[in-house]
Amino acid sequence: MNKLIIKTPREAFELMNSNNNYLVIDIRKIYEFEYKSINVKNVKNIDINNFNLKNIDIKSKSSVFIIDSTGLQSQSFAQSLIELGYQNIFVISGGILEWQRDKLPMKYKNNSFIAKPSFYNSKPTNHVKTSLN
Image 1: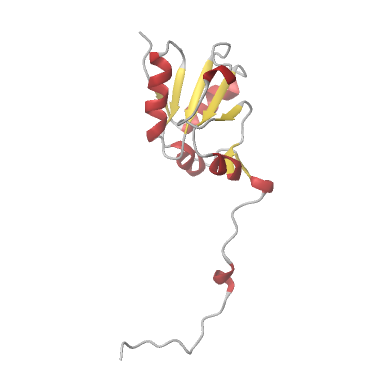
Image 2: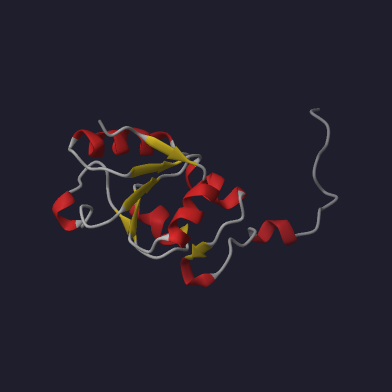
């Protein structure tokens, strides 16, 4: 019986680097995926509420990694794939947040990093009331 395998982002990244025959399925919302994603080959985004596995070639891959924002939804999605008979399904623990914390390669929309809002650059004003009178 195939069981759910959980890998840290670093472990998953090392496995991806040692074998090019893998697929990463990112199950976050499309706008999250388009804004930032892990920067590795063979990453596909699918909507877990409306997905069709016929559009994704899983069986020919030696390893399939599932990632989401925090790692929670990935486990149930991966378990569903295992119950359908797929093998070598890995969940990336902690999701994209943990991947970022580990300083692994990221890709951002327009190849730019998240900018601070403009109010961070504004100077404080002295006309703000400080009492509750």
